[in-house]
Image (cartoon, rainbow over all chains, first blue to last red):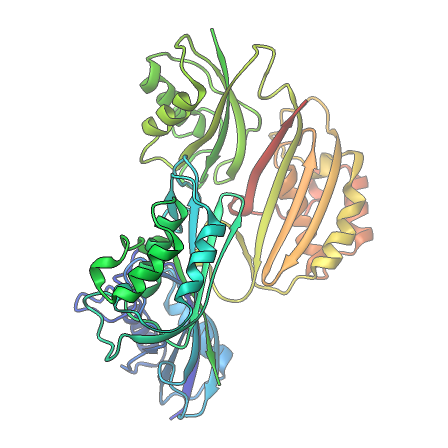
Length: 246
Length: 246
């Protein structure tokens, strides 16, 4: 039974996140229905990252096992046909060995978070970025963010609902860059805790507006206490854009 | 009576273009209602460019004359308050002399057109770009586009509904660049004919897919015949992003 690796893009706005829901309103559900429409098989679509409700993906990765044999490009086009009307697209499909697992084989996950830093409301980017009115110092955010890289107990930056066995993770990179009124925050790690990027962005925003210093951020991390976290940033600005495999 | 220059952003998707419509469904109508909501005055909002239905703006410029005296930032914030729920935002407001006219004082208008060149459907960029499945040669498009710069009779690239007295315009720049699967086409001129940019993009797309050569594009221009134009590109990818004044 062939296994296909799918690279997937979606607008998270209308979905209840990645993970299958009883009401069928998750990205995973939309993909399962498309697979069934294509080959009549009911299969689980295993994803690399369980994005939350409202979070977007430009490069989510998933795998499926189906009995039907088809050229990978046919699988891609057929799934997109069955996804019509739904803001989910299969960017590519490739046949992989059954040793490949979208979740467990992932070596690195890459997220970016987009803030639009201005007074005026969002129009073309509504639900695609976090609008922050107060001027932010992106350089201060970047400098402070460096205290988070490396191996740490990230309890402070972890949702109370996180199911990960350990709060200890290694964050490879936090980069904050300003492009005009846009601020982009890139986070890379082998894996993330639930709400980790949005918790980090919410705390970096406090640094950007001068409410927190770099030392305050370091103390919040060291506290290993969820209540030390800044307000969690909204899902609108978060994008899972790449997953690397060995 | 003070005159205010407004710089405006909008998602053109839900609007019947810029210009006021009997059903009130134009961007100009939304702005007129916001001005009336702010100061109780019924005024015309004069715009620099009459964007078509579905065309977006990141830097449309308009002017209004209102009796109410207010700090420009108050005008901006009040109009945005009255625009809530509508994808139109006033980025800035400034008081200008009554000699300033958003349309007639404009020295240069800047548009860009965004093509996404890939097989998979659009998700996060739905209605924000033109999806072209067939691979396009952006370098060939750029090279060909140079035959259009300068002063020409643009009858070929002009809508039958164009109200401009003359089809002769000077196109200052056509630049086609590829960034991964994105192709961006920038056009700059003092003023444009109706549908000129979309007509140019539609013809450049034929060059990109190898159906037209640079010489074919030159012949289409020289024909000064609307029927020589390629299929007009859809509005989704077009953005009025800047208007310059003296």
